[in-house]
Image (cartoon, rainbow, N blue to C red; front, side):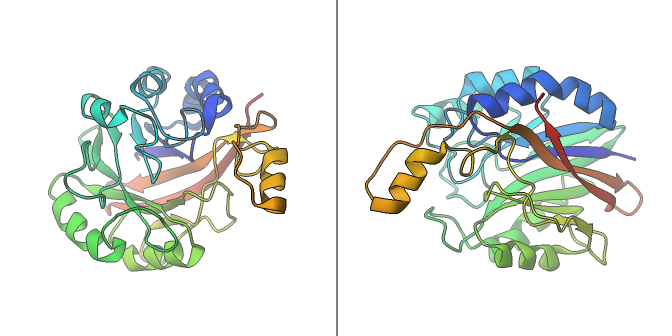
Length: 261
């Protein structure tokens, strides 16, 4: 039975260092056939670059997804097309560079992985997620046996609604973006694995992966500041999902949270 390990938003050097150091042993321990990670915050806490994408692949990451910060690193728009294991959100404008989805294969079973951006409180020009997903499902079913959607969205209500919207039509709907793991990992009635947010793979002594002091100062006086990536209490967070090849639905989903050391 194919097993996917999906890792939540990798944040900065602490997050990617933990993933690179621990992934091969973790993958073997969990028996994961594929590893997919959101790496939109892997470079300095905002964005991704080709060098880091290749380092993650060398460490055992089969596929990398992105979110609303995908273009934050200068020049990445010129690099992304050379990275066959990286996809950007599918509902960004069609003119954007980069792949819209990935196809992972194990013993003849093909899993499509793609990401959509939510629309509530997101400052990104993206197509309406609920309308876009219908078009993408019709298109992607022709390329794969099962579909995995990462829904990169701000509000819990929008993510929960997407889970119910795709129950029975996708093997998994997995929420990211808010960096805080939720306690609602489950299989929905028609066989879709769901969680509102898998959490981040990064430093938890901080505010969403950033140092505490400048965040508190900004909250107090409203003045702009740099928010360096924090360093302490680094954890690898994600979900482990089993998919039945016969039904093309999930049979198990388990939240993973592992200290980096």
